[in-house]
Length: 92
Image (cartoon, rainbow, N blue to C red; front, side):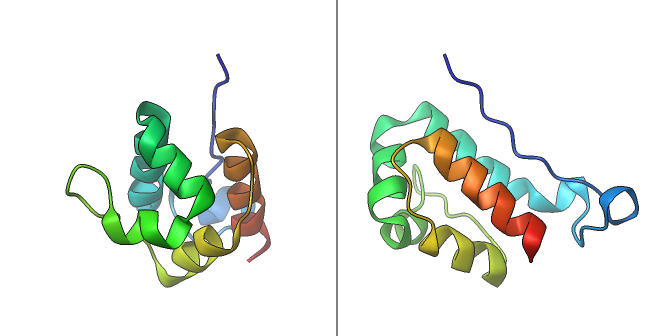
């Protein structure tokens, strides 16, 4: 089983703008993708649709920057997707 981790640091520890608790919507998005094959496939193939539809009736209140990143990432696996999102968040 592959484990996913999304590194999120406070501004003081690594120079990032968001505090650890501020990315809860992003964490929920990845949690939904881990537990649901259908949502994961949609996120990988049609991220705009996945964000618009949400999971089990709940949407993800992502920042505009997070939405932009999610919509532009292309990956074959959730692990690769998470790594690319994480890298994009580090560089913006």
